[in-house]
Length: 229
Image (cartoon, rainbow, N blue to C red):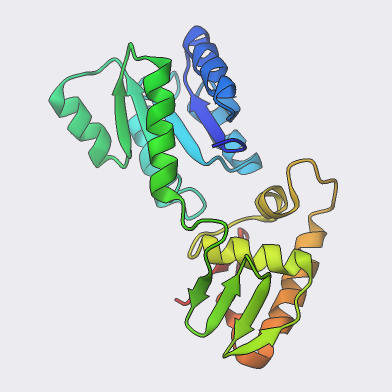
């Protein structure tokens, strides 16, 4: 679970700090937001792997914020755990129906919260690192570091390989340049956003002879998406 990122949307500083402390001890990176507006700013900058959402926020209901995130192509697939003092069955149903993937009633144990995050991450993990990925006749083998298109091997550089592997692990999801730099190049890499465009172009050129270049789609104003649709 080390290296995964969690956005904590909670207006009470003491609770936010308690959660952050527990998650960092578990090896998670934490982003914090005290209201809905700050949460959206954080999401625009760095995409988290999980969102923890308080119901009662000063500027917008957590329920409404979840609905917005689930409508947004950039954030719709991020799992969300709702954290709230509302423990009635109807409230839980309302929270889950709004799009939350899990529901935890305050007060809660930090250990239980970490366990629930781990369970969510296990559920959404698309593939193990060594398992081959296949989309039709396009196959990527991480263990052998090989890409086959229609049974022919493509000679691919390490950056294009990592970029294709990331896309194939996260199909139908839009990522902007900053997010791709973060996930593919690493959080400590100091490269320009334009670098992403250059490597996407190279990757498309490598896939074009096999008619797979169209799988990497440009989403105007948002970024890139890997999809058969």
